[in-house]
Image (cartoon, rainbow over all chains, first blue to last red; front, side, top):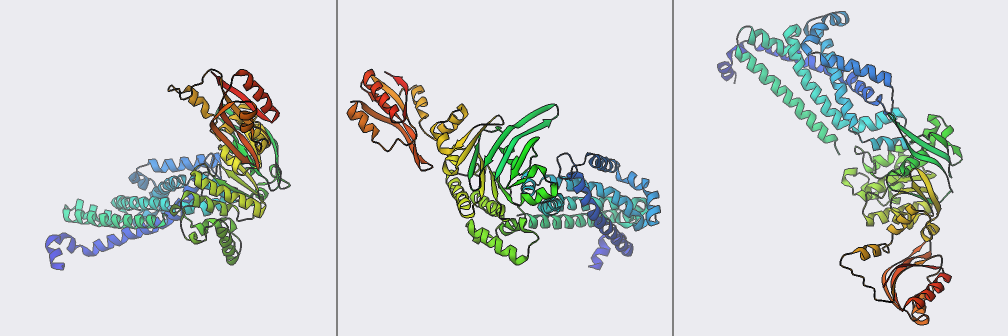
Length: 226
Length: 342
């Protein structure tokens, strides 16, 4: 096996340690910023949705502000967002580069994205269920927990899946401006040193990674649909 | 049990104002089944939502079980709503919860054992004890509505609001759901308000009925009297919809002319009012007034225990005999309408 790999992709095998390190960095970036995005992005989406006109926590002002914040960050291409947030990142985590430095820009990229995904998942919960819950005497917060979030599990799972997939993409972009990880590895060797084997190997790894995430998401969403 | 005083509900959509309910006052006594009937857009669903304040009336007061809901705080209102069950046309069951989970939803805060006992007894009541672990998507429409009824009864409500609960069901299932509602009303003494556009539903289980048109209650009364002598055009339409007698108009307009009247023959519609059908009227007409009577359509039913309905007949024997018979019938509380004559 090792011989075979050495024959097909000698450039990669020669740098397998760096590849492993890059892979691990990518997993760290996706894992940490993914986990924080879930904790902040889903509630963000809940507020985006429920403060809307006619929503159960209707609040025009809050909704307007949240919507504008969301649209602002979502309209900036991620590479520019990453550059823009370097300063903020230094301020908060004390680093503008590396895995640590990438977390803040990644969060600003994914939280608004997941927020909108969550918002549209909640919009799919039939209005009749909310009315039924209100008729049974449920409070707005009880409706958020026991009706919206529970009924929207399949939709939110799909949203989370899409978010993680795009997060993997973002980490590759962040890699090109010094965040480390697979993107950085591909740019440093595949692009700068003209080693196409490296580029292709990284692409293959990312494709596999995305496929695994997508398959897991689809499986969970299916399990949660009754 | 339920008292609405001068209730109005206006919806403002941009520059337009829609007055869905206009100055409705009504009083439904404890233990009664009241029907609210009207065509789509008459305001009946909005009126039902005004009872538990899912729609807060623009004007007027709503009192249920002695508590003026329109004066309560949001928190007090939520407590009170637990005593007002509601079922819907599209069932509104939680797809992510099993039958058990749906019925247990409103019981939060009680002990596990208490919940389990309550859910079990409710599922027994609606005849779905074996479906506790099924998800709503695995149930038929009628079963879903039974689950919804069990859920609505979970907090032992005083009132049950039924918003077009049988409109998405076939006639057979409709009857079984209505029978269940009647049983709930009798055995638990729950006051039921039924919103419907089907007069058949009113006929089958209601004690009293409110007819709505353009946001107003235009006619009200006990079901027998509404059927016996509907006053407003809209009420007559609903009453006619439950009988086949109105088909005579179609038959007369039929280009194939299935009804041919010979000279001296009269096409009559006999409306039986009050308690009149126990007499052998047709035989009397035939013997005493020497009329030849041919019954074309008939629709006589028991409503609230009293016979009610009518016949469409062709009476042959000439003008004099027919008018003498008409006079006799009106004394017997049968209203005669001459539809056509030969």
